[in-house]
Length: 391
Image 1 (cartoon, rainbow, N blue to C red):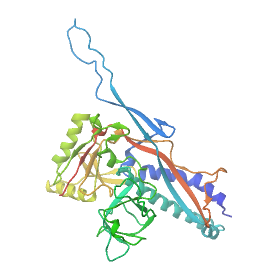
Image 2 (cartoon, rainbow, N blue to C red):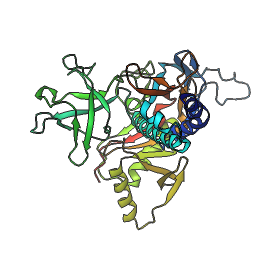
Image 3 (cartoon, one colour):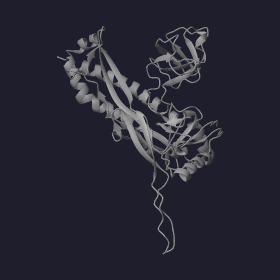
Image 4 (cartoon, rainbow, N blue to C red):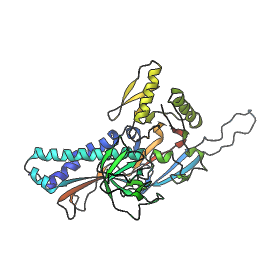
């Protein structure tokens, strides 16, 4: 007979490895290329020394001159707290009881829950990679329409059905004090850039931002933060360390191989960068395809780890990702990124070693997957971004 103990063992011995592999390598094309390491993790923090510039003491001279004076290489210390990444599944007591005498039905039940967990975690990991760490999903631009629960937002790419969200204050520094309740996204209208929430629209919501419930300022330091304008990055002052600023070209207009190569050359010349991954929005990928066709050339494709397929530019994969803003293209040196982690994905266990626990006050059982990690870019100046691509 199938019991909770049976389910516990299945989650530990059968599903954990599969889920971990899927989330590490199949969740996102960019994530699959980033090194994952437990180095430089000390307790709840990542403390990492990274070098910049070149070593001194190199020069030429006569055979009787003094030798060049040695100059130590410059270092900066990154210091940042690990982020807590969670994924929770829920199974009703009724569902477990209905399948306890049928092993096949029980396996189907667990498979369905695992697929749902992987799908949800994949969405959030991808969103975080290109986000700025704040968990902000978008801004409400219209909130007083005839449809009571319909909200127009600046972009729907970060929203998904069943997402739990909260309003931020007008200053965007915390959750809204007047209306601090959690809301659920019930539908997403991509064509009209609208979302349906389980709460009536209020005129006061206009121009406010929506963030992940309980996730504000708690997400991975994604590309949005690395290419952002904050005064510090990983605790290091940007204005005093120009190498913390990536290359950015704005108002690009029509995409061209010249614009892409200029960005690659700029960071190669200034930082010795070796671009090996290009990410863009679906719209920009179509612009790039049209650009290649205009040269009467075939469009080459390649297979990437994790089952992804990509166009290429001079042998570099060009991947479209829904979480890249329209009009943007990232040109990245992925060897300069690390996902520093306390360990790989694990189930949270109770004092008795059990994974599946009853949700207090409800006839349901939950299990939670966790990973403590943070994304680090060792050399931000070896990364590039093109914005304002319109054709």
